[in-house]
Length: 134
Length: 131
Image (tube, rainbow over all chains, first blue to last red):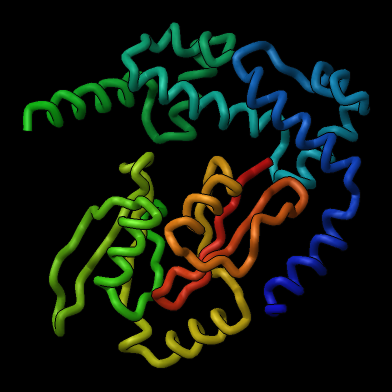
């Protein structure tokens, strides 16, 4: 057995021994993946897995390294890029991925990608036009 | 500052180019000649072509400590680079059929599943799927 395999086994036994906790957080992540476009909050997520919301927050952060809220925002931004590339308007995109205000969507989008949704879309659409010309 | 490049040390750039494009499915992005037959050779993911580039650099041939470190990692079965995939089991099946040699079969590690293969250029590469 290689050193790496031994290390995998050793670390799994220490860090990932609590099967129940792991199933809970995997369930939460998968719920976010499938329902990022609706109004999600900690209360709802904690009801789904029958754990208190503070416990849930701690568990999620422990296993995924970020909070459910941060995870959800990243997911929504990733999806909004797909919508914008496909030519969906900024306003439609904002609501389609679950944000409730255009202002917070634009601000978050700019923070995460370096561009506003409008700038991003213009750049992507002009790029695809150039590609088809060459 | 932006992260745009990940370096992978390889013994043979041409062989690495073939393996990484033909088997793994990366796409060549930049290929320019440097001195002594060396190239600045980069690849991108087929599904994320404006994402970070992989630099296949012949460092082990020119800098002994790099070779020593790479050999030690290989010997210990240690991956130094990992790529994200949607489905580790499916990639394991696909690459095994193409003759790729795996040292760690798909293994669940808590909230991820990993597998490790030999890139035939001196490196163990880990594939990871978030569960």
